[in-house]
Image (cartoon, rainbow, N blue to C red; front, side, top):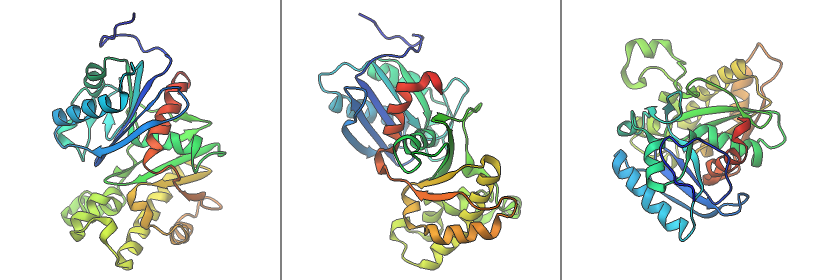
Length: 293
């Protein structure tokens, strides 16, 4: 019998797996008993308090695991991680989670080895391998949810980085960053994220019917698309997250075409197809192939 301990080496193991996706608003979780399919998927709210969050995680996991013994746990976490992918460096929409060792906490709760990646990276991997990005060699995924972030997947592998990617924090309005005010630091997230839209209009994005609001959000997003294209040069850009549902791809393509002049054309723009399960599918692929990523 193999006993888990915090410093146990990370080795490829056989299912059952516990898969998770911890976002700024929701925790998604499932098990894979055969290493190929998702079973017992569940979605619960993400507590703002870290300790309460870990309690909810453990209780939810216990319900869906049942009598099975989990051999490995992997998933995505909202926010930037330290170099070891163990400690949350900064989670802007879950500030109490920042500075916490999420890998250790989950490992102690489940008693199994754990791998953690950024949540947008996991969803992007899922969409690249099983969803809207399937069949493309260079895929960029952008999530427009509580916050904004993205990832690049090349030939089925997550692009390497020191601390992950945080594309929502690219500055698109320098003047706002200097003067502050309603537009925060002038970052892309300050203009197109669900949290920013809620703060500005006092409504959840799905409650806003004014098309002029969405026209402006689309214009701002086009500048983010431009920057992603010139930095990452993808074949396809996949948009996911709740806010993306209100974005017209036709209008976004038109604005992006007007802005982008250095390349012949804007990459293909698509909407994500895996819905709430994108990060879990990405985690499943990751655990099967993490030695390659």
